[in-house]
Length: 126
Image (tube, rainbow, N blue to C red; front, side):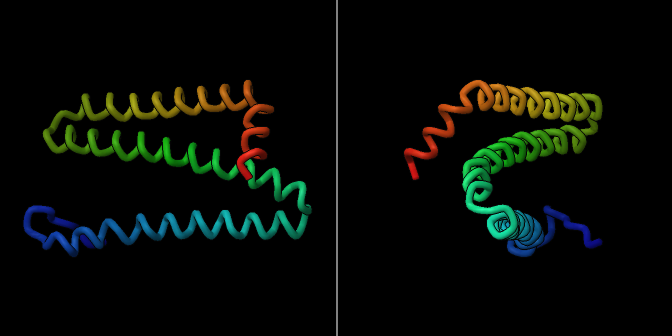
């Protein structure tokens, strides 16, 4: 595996080194959603396809929030590790995991409490 030295390597090559995995991950996620939609639409029918269409935005929201917390937490943790402060880095990791759990739990609770209203909102906007 090639290592990256951010002090000496060119910015363009370092950027591409980080960009390609990120774009590849988004392409794979999009393909997953597309193939899942095709299989559900053909195999189960239009009612299941409608249910899937209602859940995909929430799936994207959960993914975006978890990535935001995970990437931000890992960047802060890496900075602390780079300074040699391993205890604070571990504490930041634990806080990121705990925050992800709290945010996910709150979103699930809100979604379950207002499930009927959320379904009606999505039907009106389509």
